[in-house]
Length: 117
Length: 115
Image 1 (cartoon, rainbow over the protein chains, first blue to last red):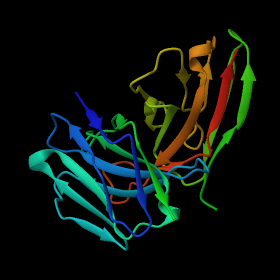
Image 2 (image 1 turned 30 degrees about the vertical axis):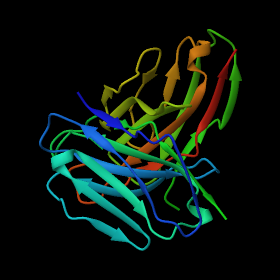
Image 3 (image 1 turned 45 degrees about the vertical axis):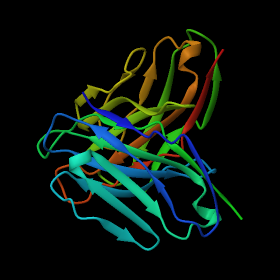
Image 4 (image 1 turned 60 degrees about the vertical axis):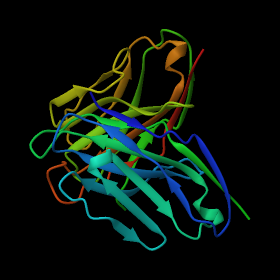
């Protein structure tokens, strides 16, 4: 069965610190997709990244980076030099439908990140 | 402007009174989905649809119905709402997972209260 665990319920750091949000997933499929979404205080959901199971390259986008490790079933998200605007709830999600069929998407329970000035 | 719209944005209703939350997207996306968000539980998928006339259950489908008669619309129907369906609901759409670009676009959310 699919499962996504975000063990960190809340994290609070001081601005400019680096912070890593953990995501551990479970799936029996060899083909799957992993996602990160951001939900700022305004409530909308913003897509950050998608990664498929065949692409283990780490991704960097500005201050954001993602570390995908199949060996530990983890897809962690790091914010470098955090800013107050990074304060939000972050969700990790998993879909294991593969290339030929749509499937359920399972979200983790989210990590609330607070960046203090 | 590419967007997913939901209506209504806020709704207070009473137990047992049938309601429909509409969802529409203008991006010609194949995949559409409904989620509910509850504190401490993250987002849970209610139903999803791969294309017109193709719907399937997510993790929490009980008490909900959906239909996909047109590609752009994916209404969520609560035939007999109960207080445990009080939640924040999101509709989302994306191109199908097999293609190269699968960002999910979310609607603004519908806050439903069932008394």
